[in-house]
Image (cartoon, rainbow, N blue to C red; front, side, top):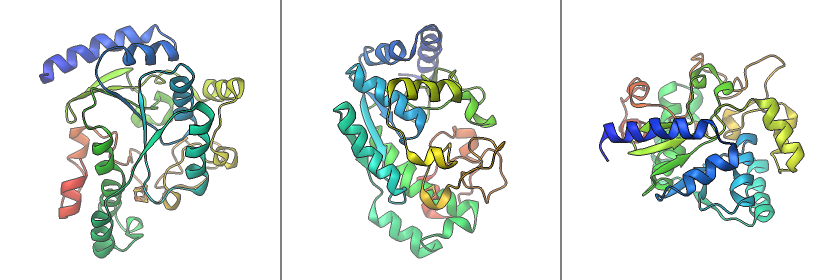
Length: 256
Ligand code: SF4
């Protein structure tokens, strides 16, 4: 599919999805014919989507990036979620060679020392495994919401990902956190116990801290960096990715 037709299709889908509820949005995508992959971080938004996929037995592949640096609570929740909904969550792990190369160059926790090193680590542990998770996919479903950060304020329901040659679907784009929490309580959806301890957004253990009252939802992610638009590279478009330092072989090959 050409870039223009991918954009046109995403634009049409964006309009279709707007008027549907969550289950309707997911069912529509599952019925479009191409392979649909939902990548879950096991965060509260993603649990809402997984619950809908499992409860409605939708033909959507559920995958997660097992970075090797996740909280124990997150790892335990993968198993619990599979049991609750009778689904398989496919784990995608980083390549040992990439981890070794990162550790040799920066040190195992070198991501604290520079943005370049941090992007290199996210590249090895997240971005590269994500590429494998999305192999052959026409649709990539995510839990992105407009309220998560200023960087995500314009999140559409469907957008062309020209870099990956697929359409990204964000079925919770218009949900706020209060609606998410109420839905989770009403449907008794299992969630990460860390949310109740001040972690609204949960990533790798060494790069996530609890937030203080009044702080933005993602303030606890890579908190030592000053850039308000910090992301891990998974949801960074080409233009933004091009700003990532590319001075190392690892960074240039893995971080887009
Ligand atoms: S979040 Fe931290 S530990 Fe996880 S991949 Fe990124 S830099 Fe590495």
